[in-house]
Every structure is written in C-alpha cells, then in structure tokens.
Amino acid sequence: MTRKLAVVALGGNALLRDNEVGTIEEQERNTTETLENLVHLIREGYNLVITHGNGPQVGNILMRNDAGEAMYNIAPMPLDVCVADSQGGIGYMIERMMRNVLNKHKIDKNIISVMSMVTVDPDDEAFQNPSKRIGKIYNETDANQLSQLKGWQFKPSPKHAGAFRRVVPSPTPIDILNQEIIANMVNEGNIVITAGGGGIPVYLDGEQNVRTVDAVIDKDMTSALLASSIGADEFYILTDVPYIFKDFGLPTQEKLEFLNYNDTLHYLNIGTFGEGSMAPKIRACLKFIENGGQKSVITEATKLADKSFGSKITLEYDNKKIAP
Image (tube, rainbow, N blue to C red):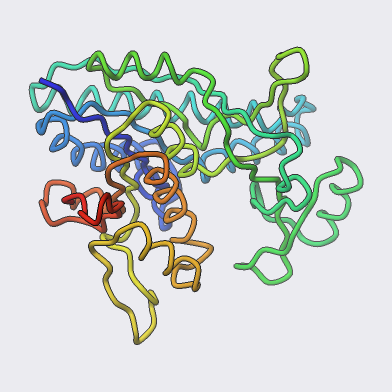
C-alpha cells in the first residue's frame, strides 16, 4: 500500500498560548493536546513530518542570553545557536509527548527529531530591511545603547507604546541541507520532527563551507519548501482559527472553505489577508501548490478528525479541481 505523505506545521499556539507563562508543564500539556489530533492522520495511513514554530521559546533563550551576560559575564551565543537550542529543546518535547500519545493509542511507530540547517542567499534583499522582531522589549535609551554596542537594529514595537525590539532579516529559504535523509526516514514509516523555527539559517561560501547569518526564517515557508522537496502530497498549517476568512474581523467577514490556486492568489493580491497573521501562511500554501503539491490546508488541530475541516487550497488541472 502506498501511503500518503503529509507535512504538518505546528503553529506557536500548539505549544504555548498567549495567556500562559510558558512553564514546561504548560508547554507539554498543549503539545500533547495538539498531537492527539494527529492520531487521526496516522490511522488514515499517512506518513508524517512535523515542523514547528519557536517564536516564544527562542525569544526566551535570547533573554537568558542577555541576563547571563549582564549578571554573570557569560558569553552570549549568536542567533543561529539560539535557534538550534530551541530546535533541540522543542523537538525533544514533541518527540517525548508523541511517544506517550502513540503509547496511549497502542500505535507502534518510531519517532526521531532531526536538527535542520536551511540555506538562504546572503544577498537576499531581506538583509537590507530587517523586519522580524525577536527577543525582549527595550526602552529607547537601552535600544540606542545596544545598537551602538552590538550593532543591533531596532524598530518600535507595534503592541507597546515607546518600546523597541531588535529586528533581524527574514530571508527566503532555498534548501534544507538534510532533506534526503528526512525523506528516507519518513518514507520508511518513521515520524520525523524537523525544520523547527524555520530551520537554522546558513549559507554556503565559495568553497561550499557552511557559514551562518543573523536571521530568522519563516517557519511556514520552510515547511512548504520541505514538503515540496520530499514529495509530500499534502501540507497542513495548524493555527488558532479553523478556517481562512475573507475580511477577518470586519462586518464583511466570510469563511473561505474551498479555494483553488487562482482565487487564493487573487485574494492575497488585493489584500484580503492580514500581513501580520494569515498572509504569510497563504503564501506558504500557494508555494507548495506551485511546486506540485496536491492540497494545502489551514485549520485548527482539533478539526483534523472532521472530514469537513479547515480551508483547503488546491490547484486546477485541465479544469478539473482536485477533490479536497
């Protein structure tokens, strides 16, 4: 039997909710609740790759960096190492919780967490306009001092008046360095956890040596790239809303359940989706479809067992729409 292959990207709320402190107990509980919903896909015969965000976690790691340097003169680690730290810690947590979920349901599967480096173009235009906010909030005086001392760039926080946060580039992912190994493992029936936080951003120099950059890659774009690279049939983004909505939060709000590529692209181009929320996810879904994927789905984890769940984006071939 040929199994379908799905890449499932866990959003930040799958691990840590906005109203929580971020204790390990909270994160483990949230992770378990999310992973319970993947059992349906496993029982349906899917091979799975799980990717995940790391926004709150890597932000906390960066704050520990700052505190360690200020209080104990501990040398701070660069951003790529902090992303790697979050990959390892979150990957371990997801793997352990998934093992417990599978044990509960009497499902026998191997699970493995894989560190992932993702190449970017060091000349990507994103390096000229850093936009991804990371780390703690600073007042203007401290932000100016850190800018002079460390060369960091800051932008005002949209959520806090008079506050500033460090911004770093968010370049486009080009290649996942260990994608062949990931493909081999998942096609053998193993559950693979990888590409955490969009992957560790690196580039290859003229001699093909791996070099690092201070950047953060969009998790959903890397997940879509990985899904295409390993020949996944379907790509899922699990978020905190069950559907894509046109004009979300406005009187004209409308649920968009079944979408083809052209309609979705049209909505994106006319600004239907918020840039700070749904638009990046839509772009990732479209990229997967462009590269040959059958179906992209955006939904809540709790809706996966529902046959009518979520918003599906497909491509039309010869005027015949792929069944969602």
